[in-house]
Amino acid sequence: MGLKTYISLVVSLVVFFSPVYLKALQFFKITAQHRESIQLVIYNQNFALVRETRRINLPFGEYYLQVENIPEKIEPESVVLYAPENFKLLSQDYRYDLITSKTLLDKYVGKDIKVYFENPYTGKKELIDGILLSNQDKPICSIKGEVFIPCPGKIILPQLPSGLFSLPTLVWHVENSSGGEQLIQFSYLTQDINWQADYVLVLTEEKKADLTGWATIMNQSGASYPAAQVALVAGQVHKTKSPPAILYQAKAQGENISHQAQEQAFFEYRLYTLSQTLNLENNQKKQVRFLKKTDVSINEQFIYRGENYYYRTYYDTPISKDKIWVCLETVNDAKNNLALPLPPGKVRVYQKDSLGNMVFIGEDKIPPTPINKKIKLNIGMAFDIEVSRHQTVYRRLSGSLYEIGWEISFKNNKERFVKINVFEDVPGDWEVVNASAPYQKTSAHELKFIILVPAQGETKLHYLVRVKG
Image (cartoon, rainbow, N blue to C red; front, side, top):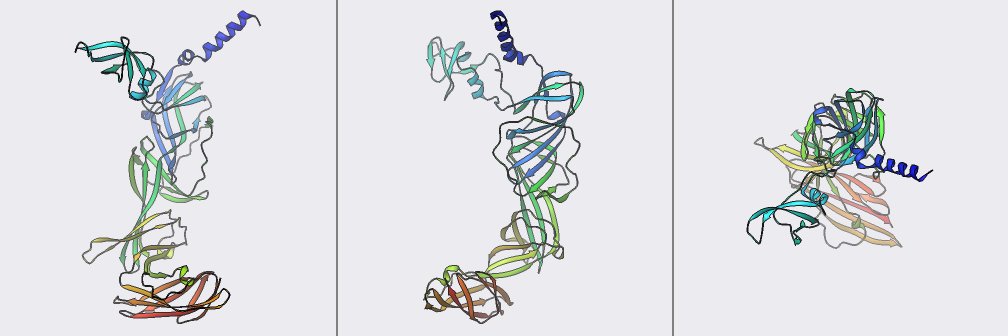
């Protein structure tokens, strides 16, 4: 290859890859005004899948398409384009270098600027040429050979520098072999959209309650989603760190998220599709009711739990700091008027007083609760039931074998009898030697009694266990 040919080839390559060549292609914008629909699948792990449909008239040929009104927290590598075969996506840039006073000045470091300021020597306001020297902390400029720290007055730039955008923007380099109206569908993942379930349980009468479920949606993604179809996913989806950006284009497909309000199994998760569209603004928290059940059967329980360390030493004084927990319990089935998979969330419990005013009486969290699973809420401690215990026996039989006896006294100040579920956490290998009430060994380390205490009365539980360990 001759020198002349080589130089010609190098010049051609430089021209081809230079910004001048890149700018030779036209830019077209596709904005929120072109949006026909938007669908959100929100995960309770602070991210969402967004799918948009936009319609626009586009020319034949190769050009750049600026896709505006996308979230700041988009994962650019997750973008999938659903488009006809004639519409080819060649490359993609995510432009998040937005126009601010700092980014504008950063572009002009070392370049000519104008400064409108009051001349310290003449006292007159002047518009004068200068050079921006630095923009690290405060702008530093040179005016007529003198350095001003910071740069005085108002800095005026000759023009808007290239490479900055008013909004986060996807820039697609596309090749369109068929001009005219185009239906552009694309999807992407974005961070900082989250949802959680919140429940309100109102006790209406004895052993009955109304349950309302609210989906609380938080949007801090940096974009708004008007008239969006929304589905909520409950479950832990595995996500890894973002890989290097890989551009992917899929063929156009017509499936949409269902408009029906329904709950369904979805892979190993639960999918809750809301019946109405939502206007979800940026930096907004919105609550939507997704569940309403009335006349739910529910039982009140009193629970006492002993501690594991009660069996490891001798106690010469009574223990009276223990409390009785008040719990509400039901089963998530049709018999109790539920039978709906419940996503995890906080349950706030209310009851009306004698004047009909709603009073908050406690709260608890529930885990993901499938159908036929027991629901148990610890909502507080009983005020009218007292408990105390003292050790009646603590003797070593041999080696690591001990006998330990307890008397537990339950005093009921209510006008009705109460049933108390007593759970004792017994360590090591153990057996009950004797007990004043029937018992169950519910697990390797749990001993259960059910104690009835009359109104305005007292019941004492005595038992002796033999423990090895």
